[in-house]
Image (cartoon, rainbow, N blue to C red):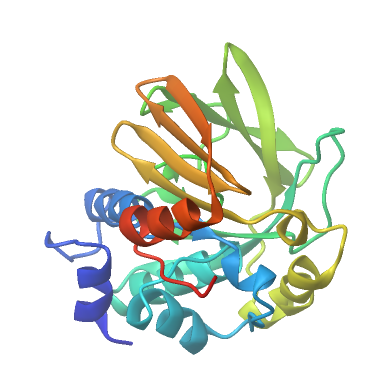
Length: 249
């Protein structure tokens, strides 16, 4: 674990003593520097549920990843800095309102004086960690979030256009990285996985978000969304210049 290299990757130069403020700053820096992307899947490159490979891809190869990679690597960084981190299994809400399977998504619990939900691998979601306090509405970057009790778990919900939308259901039971391996394999091989059906590369910005999905570029600045079609040559250039991702055509 090369902590200075990781901090350089996310362009972080602040304090490192474990605290809520340092956690917020590291989380925000990660969201602004490392893209959520599934581009290896369309290239037939296997993603293995292994912390060392996650770190090599994100830090050394200067790439992004999807939830298992992003939160697996971020958990390793936090632990190296002295934070107490637990891996959590989450079930992503489907378009029809159904719950996904266990280990569908990997999120993080960070224990300080108060507990926090951290997640740098869910794409367009919270930029800074959320207090693990059910019922509390938490606003950041123009959006509101809340955690709603559901049996033995909690729903993460986001408020957009004055309506609450379920994002994922999770429990606080501690998990091992190996337990996510089967779903990691599923998401890169099954025709039913959203990650095999569409290529995506997306990055939060202080003003909103920039995303390349399929053959489209989508940019949101201060709530204003712009979208345009891309040629394959334009897509390659934008991935390299805006996301720092260089891939074969």
